Length: 163
Image (tube, rainbow, N blue to C red; front, side):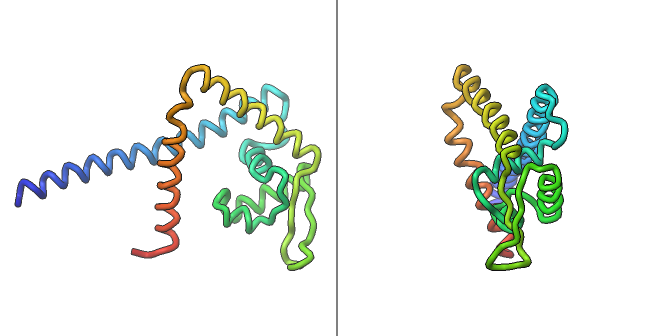
């Protein structure tokens, strides 16, 4: 019995170590992605917006959305998305229009200027995908994506349900 509990503690320690490694990687990858976008924009002379705002434009794409919809999709936190949407509207990257159904709600969509920035990110991501493919680094991506989706579902459950 005693040997079993030590063995389980060892397994738990390994699971915890792997989980903490995953958390650190996810955090570093996000910061690196923002740095890659920032460097690309500096190279291209796009200095008016930051990487988070550029990703917001990329994720909105051709959709017309509210800040609440972006939050509910899990892309952005409340105060950050509202600030960034306001800034992007002020800078001419997005149109905003009060919702017909709910006058308190504002719907946003990209302007031509916003679509150009989205195109820059699309080009960057296409180049990255081609480079990954040339280096034979794409075969594991479906499995990595599935593992990350399972982690996302797990975290979502932690927020919605108290255990």
